[in-house]
Length: 287
Ligand SMILES: Nc1nc2c(ncn2[C@@H]2O[C@H](COP(=O)(O)OP(=O)(O)OP(=O)(O)O)[C@@H](O)[C@H]2O)c(=O)[nH]1
Ligand SMILES: [Mg+2]
Image (cartoon, rainbow, N blue to C red; front, side, top):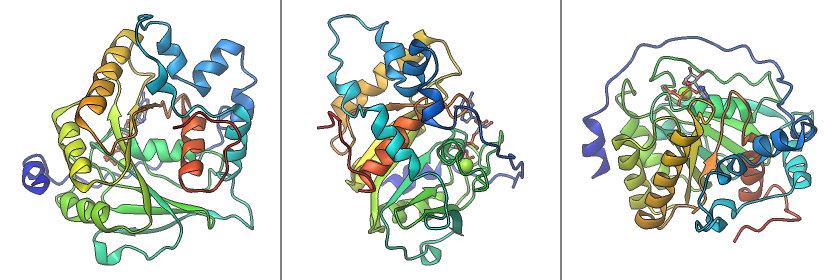
């Protein structure tokens, strides 16, 4: 059972409070990113294209680009991430246990992964067009102690989870596993893996947990700015291989992101709005 396996690695950590001040970054909007020089724009909008050049010709690229929306679709999706009086984006509540979890009607997506993998940073980047929504990040692993719920109007809910592994809160397993099993409106789980270090033992345990739960999930490769392309490609291909050979509920395409440099953020916004039924895509090759 996942609970037993994971308990080995869990211990409580100090509550560190380093609140990052959010300001709208110049690359927060896809409209600005699309105006960058062509090569740069491509690698920010579709980060896989940067790695593609290093792949052998014989490698089939289809699986890496199943979800490949147009820039117009990304612009459409982005509108959902801008708060307005009729579409309010806000932090809603936090929960430590399932009986504290709010009853919400809209579709939900959640972000799980090892402590320090970049879950809160990614959510902060997704919400960067609404900088008043405060998402706390920290250099110290184990920072997020509760399940934090963010409402995106009546469209969907985003849930930031505490991490597992080093310095994770003791009750991670009691909190997150039952959530994943029972949350009715959960449409997709995003399982984050640090692209600069590749799959770790704890990631494989989480992957196994997701397989046991049998609900659809997606892998997201974080911190792609943090290492050289060779390391990233090796880690990415290894992950892709594990997804292909060891999973049945995982979306075959891992997403590549850097929350610091906004790489892949627009693609992920588009995927979330698509999954939650918030927009209809005009042009995608998702199968
Ligand atoms: N270079 C780089 N660093 C990142 C990126 N994303 C996050 N970080 C850094 O990684 C550290 C942890 O980020 P968090 O977002 O707090 O990680 P978390 O997964 O929410 O961690 P817990 O709440 O402890 O589970 C911070 O120092 C971030 O600045 C990224 O894309 N690139
Ligand atoms: Mg966090």
